[in-house]
Amino acid sequence: MSLETQITALVNAANNLTSEVANKMSGIDQKVDKATTAVDEFLKSSTSRQLYVDAINGDDGNSGVSWANAKRTISGACAAVPDSFLGVIRLSKGEHVLDRDASIAGKVITLIGNTSEKADYAIRGMPYLAESSSGATFTYSTSFAMGLRGYLVAAGVTFKTLFVEDGSSPAMRAYSGSLVSSQSAHGMVLLQHSIIEVNHGPFMHQHDGGSFGTCDLRMRAVTTTKGDVSGSAYTGLRYLVDQNGEEAVPYELYGTSVELIGFASWADAVRVNHANITSNLL
Image 1: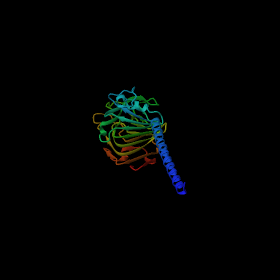
Image 2: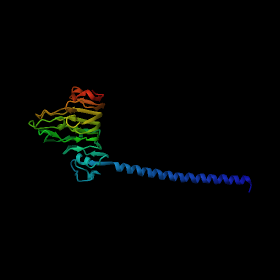
Image 3: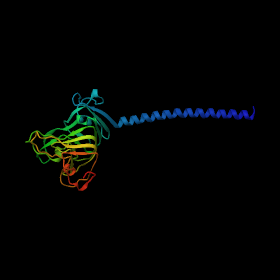
């Protein structure tokens, strides 16, 4: 066999080996990609929950994993999200009343309505009477209890704060009547393409009396409006953010493409000690 023939055979063998290695590598890459996708899906399913809430046809005894097995309340869905998890809660059209406090502590809760029909996906606090730690009776609202490291995210929904029909009801305090409670907490609320309707109670309170608590508020394409309370003799606390106590509470308040209706200014809507607020609105 001539040297030229040997070289040709060697080149062909090298090419065949290169092709075989390339095929093997392609197969390995596919298996690695498949394994990576499987791991990603496993991690995602292990750290997040997608739940459905139907206020009419749901049941809090259901799993909540589909519309056919929807939870009835937002509070029930929040309770089904483990600590340190992301909970994506999809809401049915209509009004969702918080029949009890919804604990957000240590979780990321995302409420999804419909950005083009946000007025039809409403979340309302429910009034009740209770004694404070001092023994006085106040009007309370069921609320989102932010707790430590609680994050509440919402898109395409309308939040309606406490409405009290009975003008003889006991007075409320910022911490008792708010829809978002920061008592004993530090968390954040992020809203986009949503509406905040302020009735008798504030949307959020900053708490500096007794147990310290704060909550940051960030808004994008959000309208804050004073609701119609002409049918009630109750005065209430009609603020976007109110404060329990007088100390300057450090928190962040930011808004982009936000609108106020019925308030003279952001300072009129935010009744707190402004000394430690970081904000582009005040």
